[in-house]
Image (cartoon, rainbow, N blue to C red; front, side, top):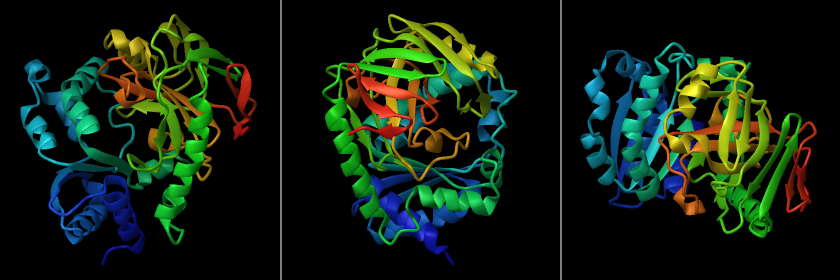
Amino acid sequence: MIHPLHEKWAELLVSYCVGAQEGERVLLEVETPALPMARALYRRLLAVGAEPHLRLSYPELTQDVLELVPEAYFEREPGLELEQIRAVQGWIRVAAPQNTRALQGADKNRYARFLARYRPVQNVRVNETRWVGTLYPTPALAQDADMSLDAYERFVYGAMFLFEPDPVARWLEVRDFQARLIARLQEADEVRILAEGTDLRLRVGGRTWLNSDGRRNMPSGEVFTGPLEDSAEGVITFGLPSTVGGSEVQGVRLRFERGEVVEARAERGNDMLQAQLATDAGARRLGELGVGTNYNIQQATKQILYDEKIGGTVHLALGQSYRESGGTNASTIHWDMICDLRGGGSILLDGETFQENGRFKL
């Protein structure tokens, strides 16, 4: 028997996020701890007449690759994966980590090369398919969030509005609210972020702000754009921790000049920070500026899918831009880091207060 909330979740992913239609091919990438969702998604796709293709992965897969593949592996094109992603119209991923620190001791340079090898596949997926990623609640994720598994499951389902009679209607409300925010942001040229340890100026004039209303990330709740690549000036401190490939990074402080990181330090995980910055030239520039709007998410969980959506936060991503925003930065990384503004921060648009202490001034 399929859990009723899993059925509701699958319907949201298939019909609202991906919009799967009769005859379309949809690739399901599901980690084995989330097998209950694999069945719910497969059945839902069959019910709408789509053609599901299921690919399972076990939790230690990336760890094994990094430990065992020869150096020549990183130079080979991911041909089969490219063929597969080009053959589908939709892509749904359900991650379900059992150990969020599995890659803590992995070779950071090999991990960066692993990501670089997969980048062509990711570019096709992002730009040529309708896609969504989501995160299945596991004991490891609950532990990172300092919650019991029951409490964490309630948090996850609440963040997606699954307890409400019509989750799609609630996501349409989010879309409308964020459209109002974008109407104001689209008028601005300079964005200034102020908080403890933070005074950063960015320019966004001429760029497109995008409405992340749950159709690509579930849950979602953010508006974002690609800042002008040479515009970042000042310093920013990211108080909330983030993870890269299972390695935790905390207390990141970056200083920018003419759009480029010229000083960088992390209180924890500094080796990962420096390895990511050294990946390529684009890794030292910003590919995204985002503002979180989901007030059903208020607690940091050490998972970027949730934490960057926290209502009252702002996040910046080093590396690859989303081309829909007008951003041009190119990199094999895209690493989001979060600055919490709820305890005394603000966002100014051309000198006018847009958000203060985590609340919007519309």
